[in-house]
Image (tube, rainbow over all chains, first blue to last red; front, side):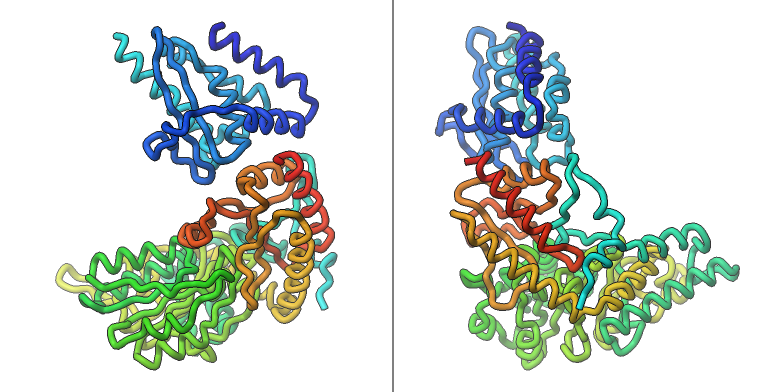
Length: 140
Length: 404
C-alpha cells in the first residue's frame, strides 16, 4: 500500500468513533498493545526532545524501504507514534519525504500538531522525514 | 467569610467552555485569572489615557504617569516597604532575579558563596550558575527531605563568612511547601549575607511584610496575583539598591549623558530603563486592590479548606501519591497515580475541560530527587469551589480507568 492508502485507511477507522473518548481509548489501546522498539535502541541518541514525555525513534533500511520503530514513556504519545509508524514505515524514502500529514488533522488529532504542544508530534514527524532524507542520499 | 459564588461573577473566563465542558481552572500556580475590575482598568487605560510616561508635558502623559506612580505606592503599601522608590517595576519574577544576580556580579569575588535551596524553579538556579561562572563564586544548595521541606540544620552548616547571598523561594512552585524564610533571613543576617526571596508563589496567598521580615530583596509577578502578564516587582532595601549597579542601559535610567560620562538616575528609575509596561503596572495596582478587598485572611482560610478537601479526596484514590507533604503548604497538590505518565492524565483531563499542569514544573532537580519524570499539579485559588474539586476527582477517576 502507498502512504496515502494507509492514511486513508486510518482516516476510515477513526471516522467510526463517535467522540473523543472512543478516539483516545483507541490510541491508548494502540499504545498499550504495540511493542514498538527493541530495548537496545532506547538510547539517549534516539530520544526526540519533547518537553514532557520521552520519545525514542529508530530507523533502518531494508530493500530500499525505511522501517521505523519507536517508543514513549507516555501511552497516548505511544498511540500517536503507532499511527505514524503505520503510515510511514516500510515505505521508500522518497515517498516518505514527499508525504503530507493532513491525515492527522482528519482523524481529530490536530491539537497535537501545534508546535508548542508538549508531546513533540511535530518533532516526531520531522525526525521521520529526516531519516528518510538521510536514507535517500544513500540511494542517490 | 468569603462568598465564592459572588466572587466567581468577577471572573468572566470562568464561564467559558473548554472542549465542550465548563472550564475548571486548576493551573493557578502558573497563572491566575483576571477579574473584571482589573480588565476594566486595562481597557480604561488604552481607551482614555495611553501615553508614554515621565517625559511628557501633555495631559495624557501626566495622567498615565500619575496612575503608574500611584500603583507603585499601592504596591509599596501592600508589601509595607518603607519607601515607594524601593519598589522597582520588572517584567516579572525572573527579571527581578536576574537584575539582582547581575548586580551582585560586581560585588562578588572568587571564593564567595551563594546559597540556594533545593526547592527552586529553574529560573532561580540558572542566573546564579551564570553569576558563579562570571565571578568564580561557589553555589551551595540547601537540601530537602522526603516531605519536600528544607533541612535547616544543613542550611546552618552551609553558612560561613564567605556567604554573600542566600536565595530561597517563599513557597515552592512544584510542591507548595512554605519555607521558613524568617529563620533563613535571621541566620543569614547574623553572618552579614543578603537574602533574596522569590515570592512568585506566596503573593497570591499571603501578604508579605518586607519590613517585618527584614528581607533585603523580594520579587514577584503580577500574573499570579490576578494581574496581567509581563509585569512584576522587585523590592529592595534602599541601601542595597543604591549599592547595585544598573541592570540595563537606556532611557529613563539616566540623569545626565555625555559621551564622556553618564550619571544614573535616582531610585527607582536607575533600574527602569526604557518605556515600561505602563498599563501593566497600573493593572498590577488594581489587582492588589481587588485581592485586598477580599482580604488575605479570608483567602488563606478558604484556600486551606479547598486544599484539605482535595487532599482527602485524592488520597482515597488507589495508587495515588502526593509529592510535597510539608506541614506548612499552600493550595498546590503535586501527585502521580501508579505508573501512569502525568502527561497522559493531563491530556485526558483537558478533554474534560480541566486545566492542570503536568511535567517537571521547571523544577527538574525536585523531580530527580523523587526519581519521577514529573507530576500532575492542581493548584487552587479563592475562586475555585469544592464542587469543581468533585468534578475533578470524578474526571481523574475516569482518566485512570481509561489509562489502566
